[in-house]
Image 1 (cartoon, rainbow over the protein chains, first blue to last red):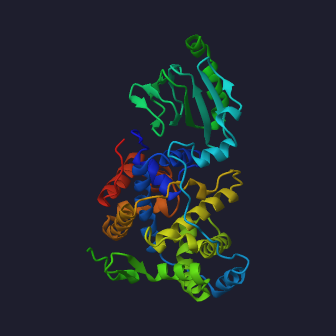
Image 2 (cartoon, chains in turn purple, red; image 1 turned 90 degrees about the vertical axis):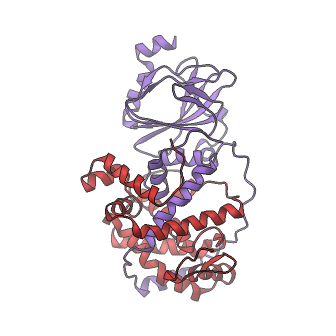
Image 3 (tube, chains in turn yellow, cyan; image 1 turned 30 degrees about the vertical axis):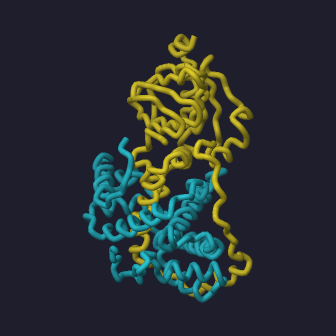
Length: 219
Length: 199
């Protein structure tokens, strides 16, 4: 059961469909772990329903109706069975599996420090970077401020920082001004999903890990 | 027993199972491929879907018609997945419309993503019947209470939900500070008694 959740505004934008692909994927992955937030999103969608129902209807002609009716034969109703029992709530969310196309071990991890490896996943989002971090047990991510925001979701293991200890399903959202130096828990490697602002600055972001100050810390 | 009220063909059956004309139509489609039921559903929802498509006016009328077709075809195909115990028909149709619109926006922007909006729906579906009923009741309550929100709050919710804008975009368009937009949304959501985890 998750202890750290997305902010209300993120859940609202997610429910409204107005959140970017990468951020929405991260929120959706959290929902996989968190019944409370799933429940909130269902309720937030009802706000959308209310606005939808009370919209001023825009007339649609019979031409369109007939066009749709003519296509019903090619689009036979699908036969739905009730969804099979899903894997346990700690399994990697299906959405992530789709992006990963394999296991964590199949991914092209890039070593950043002895404790940290990173791999990027393609969501097609032009505004946000979507990456997995692999932090060795007990390893520290060097103290870093953010140029933009950073969303993190723990998938395996856990880490701690000045705000607390995070376990699988826990979600954090840090803004530009926040600095933190998360440390993976001592007994297990940590894999987390990170969504960062502005891939246009990806080079900058990549180099940030490489700048002399950080290299000093990373040893 | 809370009586839901008479508007919008909604009534509460003695069993507590809420039903309405549109849920019946969906069931007819699922069970009998009933075209008359589909036509009734189309006449009611197509104009709402078109209004939704044109909110924020970034979509052309042609694309809006395309969206109406796409959504209504999905409604036909997927009617069997509609569960009246879980949600109102309008919520179900709205969700399809929202997903199709998000996908269409991305297509129009030549935004190449391996993910469809549908993929963002949580996999766990196994809510307890009691929890489902609770969810559905709170949904009904929220939709009723929406009418009593102050106009300045509804206006922002409309930007976010109907126009698909972020809080930041809504703030820019309404020429309001982002903090004001966020606090109005929060106030509205509290008034609607949406439960959420404090962060």
